Image 1 (tube, chains in turn green, orange):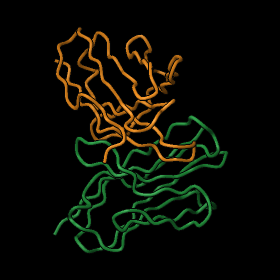
Image 2 (tube, one colour):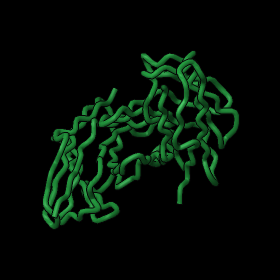
Image 3 (cartoon, helix red, strand yellow):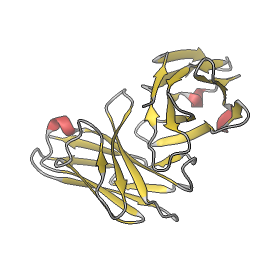
Image 4 (cartoon, rainbow over the protein chains, first blue to last red):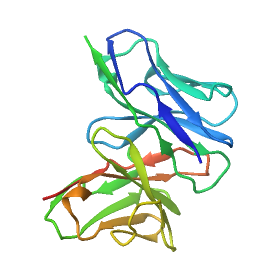
Length: 115
Length: 116
């Protein structure tokens, strides 16, 4: 079974500052990793995903994440945030190479960007 | 545009009644859909995996007689909350994959259920 730990429940940051949202996972098998964003009362939108290959993945809205197998981490970064980035961010994992598997989510990190 | 459509977006019902939530895949066929539940300020908890033409697979602790899932076609899965109680009030979200197993899940916009 897989599990995900998002180390920060809330991250306040000023506009145009860099941000890192931390995510660690646990699994005995190979995994796929994802970051989703959720705005209030809405579903989830995919930011980026890691399946294999290059450990640095780039996503939408200027976000990127780096897969670190030795540290079992998949931290999300953005060099300069905007007010509109204020939202809930979820890291998720699924077992690799398995059909029909759901995503397991972390508890989420609330990113609050202020001016 | 949205690839997974969920309806209704918001519903209020009285305790003891049943509520049906629909999840449709738009322009693609989904043999498997996933139903999640999200409490305020918390993560998404997988409730069940909905399989077209067969019984749903429920996660441990989820009452299958209370949360009835039907996946009668390749584009529609429904979740019926039977005999709803206030503690069933929550945000329910469905999801599906377009493509193979390494594709990300696409999510509906969720249904906010309030039981009074």
